[in-house]
Length: 382
Ligand code: SF4
Image (cartoon, rainbow, N blue to C red):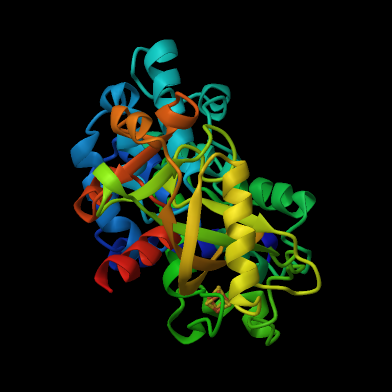
């Protein structure tokens, strides 16, 4: 088949299939660029089924770009709680503020303008511009690269920038006139529903007749993808600090710094343990772990007496894996006058508002990373 025909067949069959098979997703009911933008950010590293309830909640709470820009960051993080990769939420809000300040609250459609917004890379820019504005623009992610690698038999490493650039150029040659919005969504939909990473459903695929990988029996071995480095393990001792005196019945939480991993979220105090020869908390003698935790927290101005091991937990980020040993501790040695005067322990230690004493019912008011929610649920239900 001639190259041009091969491409035309692909685009036409794909669009026809999409018309009939597209899923009814909430962000597809409008072409509001804000909805498309929020959905695309949420869908990064997250499945559609997971995203749908978050999307509804987010749009209900922040119905416009302006309302997102005006909201306190804590509210945005709380609404994002459980979705992970929280820098997405912070960048989304920062970009909403950019749109408000630079474009009167109206999402721009130009390539440079959209790409200049915080948290928007080439993929998201292509998705917003094509889906919301029907502009021919390439939105190439792993999903799309898988489909293209297979149909066009591109045997190049999709982790390489060069391959991605080539695919972006290829997509632009595939978009039928006036159909950029549907084409982008159709390509994504085929990758999500039919041309899946494992066991692609070639027999019901609209482009199977001329799919090069299928014809050569290579659909399972493409795309070519070098393995990402496994996440680096970190060992962390974590404290559930129980209050005393006026804080009896409460536990201590602290806010993470405004920049870096899980920035601005709330957590249980925890300390990193040197990974010396595999001394993970679970394998570490309880006594050693508790003394280590007590001494390290004291250095951070958190005086506690560890009481006993509660559980082990783990959480994997893209580049780090936290292995956590969780210990129940009692707050210690606080001058009663200072403690009573301060609603937060930080006012006692640092004068800053980055610590709180909370009851179980207060958990709702703070945004925690998933791993701490799991730990707190186990603790409060025991
Ligand atoms: S025929 Fe199979 S490998 Fe080719 S695009 Fe369709 S699902 Fe993917």
